[in-house]
Amino acid sequence: MKRDEPEMLDLLAAEYVLGTLTGAARRSFARRRERDPFVDRRVRAWEERFAPLAWRLAPVTPSPAVWAAIERRIGPAPRRQWRALAAAVAAIALLGLGWLLWQELRPGEPQATAVVASEEGATLWRVELAADGDHVEVATIGDVRYPDARSLELWALPADAAPVSLGLMPASGRVRLALDDRQRTALAQAANVAVSDEPKGGSPTGSPTGPVLYVAALART
Amino acid sequence: MAESAGPESESEIARLLAACARQDRQAFQRLYEMSSPQLLGCLVRVLRNRALAEEALQEVFIQVWRRAAEFRRERGSSWAWLIAIARYRAIDLQRRERRLAGAGAEGIEDIAGGEEPHDSLMTLGHRAATALDGCLAGLQPRQRDCILLSYQGGLTHMEVADRIGEPLGSVKSWIRRGLAALKRCLES
Image 1: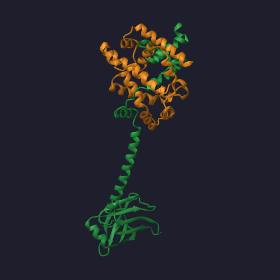
Image 2: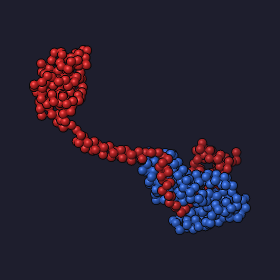
Image 3: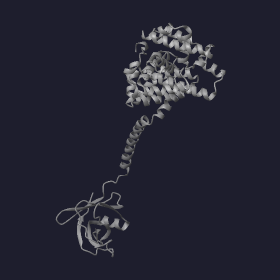
Image 4: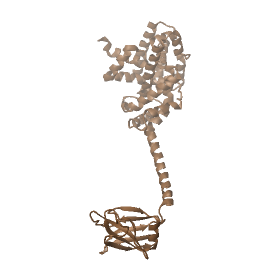
């Protein structure tokens, strides 16, 4: 075909680059360029030849909106970097604030501590009377054998009065037992705490009904 | 290629394009800063409308970002690669706009603008002569005018004919002969 002669093809390539190849002929040549490396080489040669004419045109500085739009369209990566930085700063600030709050709000040293241990000396629980005196915290610190279908109950043993129940001991982990005035008073006067074996849910009478399993001295701090 | 010794930034642009192919956004921004004024210059010249040209510039850089990996240094200069993307975009857009507007005589007058092709040729004369300059200078004046008008302004045969007030057939033949002569000259 005559149009496929190299000279003709080269002229088509030149007019394609120039822009004078128009309409359907232009579109079909563009497609041909895509799949024919020979045609593509000729087009590139003309692009190269004419390029100096383009870079000699007067430059025009784009408005900042153009770059902003391009950045938006290519995705959020730089913004994500910025966000990561902002998040890190926020996290550090939060940590600082948290530390300050913790300093402000953290419980002080407990007023008194008792460590409940077995006869063999194995530590089982630590009982702490909070600094403000409004609760007792019991933490399991050893291998506790909790009787099936029973509850172990903690008692304050005031020097001159009957034992006052403080609540149930945990089988594991820790519990926080809020104190009422009567319990607070009892603890204030107690030198010891005791743990008794009770029906499930605790003593029904308000006094120890089962055997007292452990007694621990309350050490004031 | 010898006939298109690029601007001094050629190797830097090529390096930035390679970095863009690795999705390096900083390199992309630098590339934009270095090349966007020149590319917008091309687009404005073809589209004759600042807002439309800026829209096209956006499209051009989206393409550059996506297609950076297609650029091969051994196949040609990075500037020619960028300019080609911009010019094809501008030409497509300009012809679409013109179809939509329905190009009357008024439209064409507006598109052609007031700039004389000789201006750019004079500009060329002030610069260091390249092979292209020499070869363009060797063309017959009408051939040279027609080629510069269509390349820099993105004008079709018909628009060039209207612009210089010559018959369409003459314009087609000047361009064809001019291109052939240019090629012979550049390859010699």
